[in-house]
Amino acid sequence: MKIVAVRSYLKNMALTKPYTIAYNTFSDVSLAFFEVELENGIIGYGSGSPAEDVVGETTEQTAANLNTEFVQALVGRDIRQFQQIIFETIHQFPHLPGTQAAIDIALHDAFGKFIGISVAHFYGQKVKSLPTSITIGIKSVAAALEEAAGYKALGFKILKVKTGLDVDEDIERVVKLKEQFGNHFKIRVDANQGYTIGDLKKFIDATKHQGLELIEQPMPVGTEKELLALDWSDRKLLAADESLKDPQAALQLASNEKPFGIYNIKLMKCGGIVGALGIANIAQNADIDLFWGCNDESIISITAALHVAYACPNTKYIDLDGSLDLAEDLVNGGFEIVDGAMQINNAPGFGFNLI
Image 1: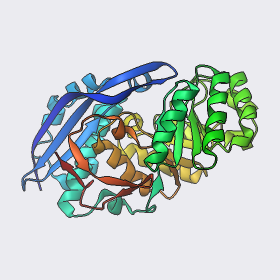
Image 2: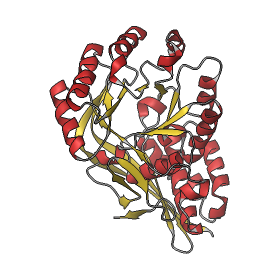
Image 3: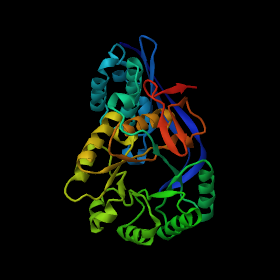
Image 4: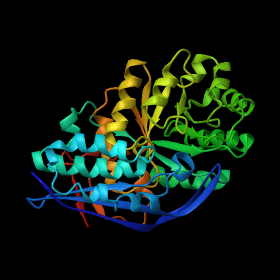
């Protein structure tokens, strides 16, 4: 089945509300979209939303790459060779994971629709459903408590609390959330590289009895060896995010003493499903749990991440709330959230619908 057309475009989309992390505040997001049309009328959809400060690629670069001669030359290729096309894409656009991901996702969607099964079933679905965390940005204790109350009313059971600007305020925010909501919420934190080793030790010691699920990327990239000063009982709760961009980094972090016990995989860091599976296989053999995350993204790429996450037996955590931040999207469907847990619909491809 031949590819007869490819299309790409860039859209700026407002967020439902601005949010703050350790090094920035966001009120909108640019997303690059990619379509692959087959000769029988099937269209596969992909999307790219790389974080420039993490991977060095902007969505504007992604959109430009999707209009190059290499991409236009996909017309005439057979969708049954989609994995070969992804291999060639990775070599054509090295270190440009947003571009890789948009093409990878669209090809997977088109292929799944072509053969009539979901992408999760194509790879073998190992996980049926997991609860996603919902994110609270850096804000006052009072504002965090108010936002958490709203998420409780919506049925969410896990909070991911952004930290990293002031460790004492971070500790207070976590403690007050546990005091007010007790065991209703499990709490994860994400310092976005904001701590020193001293800050991290202080935070861990002060929250030992709060039952935190994990601490995501507490210190800057390049300081991973400093984490080895912590006991393994503490390091196994640390999740590599910005330190983990590709399978090569996964292999390095799994060698000898491990600074992290959890790998956070984002399709926009590793270039899509093929790159994600490379990291996941290394993690499985190193006895490292998987935590699937995202940027602010379309339902298109969030659903793709969910399918590959559920195809990996070592998936333990998901944080795939990025599409919930968008005030608009190009598609709907793909998954549903029931009592905070995400379930895919198992329709062919990724199962979303163009609005």
